[in-house]
Amino acid sequence: MATAQHPATPTVRKGVPPLRAAQGNEFLFRKLHSLLGIIPIGAFLLEHLLSNFEALKGPIAYGDQVKFLNGLPLVRVLEWVFIFLPILYHALYGVWIWLRGKSNIVYYPWAGNWMYTAQRYTGLIAFLYIGQHLYRQRFTGIPLPENPYASFHKVQMELQNPWMLAVYIIAMIAICWHFAYGIWLFAAKWGITPGEVARKRFGYVCAAFGLVICIMGLASIWAFVGGKYPNVPEDPRPAVSQSITLPRIHSKASPEVFG
Image 1 (cartoon, rainbow, N blue to C red):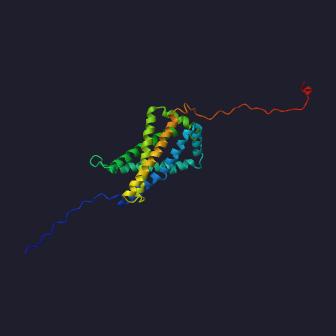
Image 2: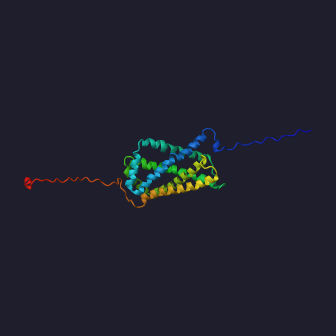
Image 3: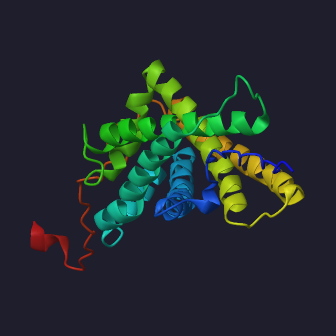
């Protein structure tokens, strides 16, 4: 009898492992990237929006807020440890993830692919804006840490350029979008919102939150260009009167003594 021939075992090509099965340290790097986007970067963004919102109260209130922040203990150490270095890591690692991934919005125009693409581009806009904003406001012109009450004047002068005003508006919308959708991604990746229903409901919450902080940011920009506080000087504080009024001395001596 003829021996039955067994078919050859098909060759299975190795696929791309999902994020949860990442090899080596990549999983930890991605988790750190996700976490830093919320804490401390997200916390700093909220603080920055609230501080800028003080501009609606006027140049002096805005200067008071800048003075308070620059007067915090170890403020320069806090800036590097909790702001500059986390933003640098989050941005550079985000670009590395972007270069390795594909959105395929042409062949697969699904919502997830569009959101992925929007998140990458808004992140790039945010990083470029933060870089130029830090350079212009911190390292050029009037040193604001030593002259906090010049902050309103410095921002107002920059926003007189219509191109810079457009940059501020576009960047504000992009940053708020990036953060709001980043919160949604964080909750999904960390298992906070398991299931499609929970993610859909939380998506509405994140969209509303992003809209609120975006309105706050745009309102802060309006405070500098809206005309309520035009041509603010470098130091908007009222000048202290140099005249000294001496108290009147009532003497009971007779006028003849001084005659």
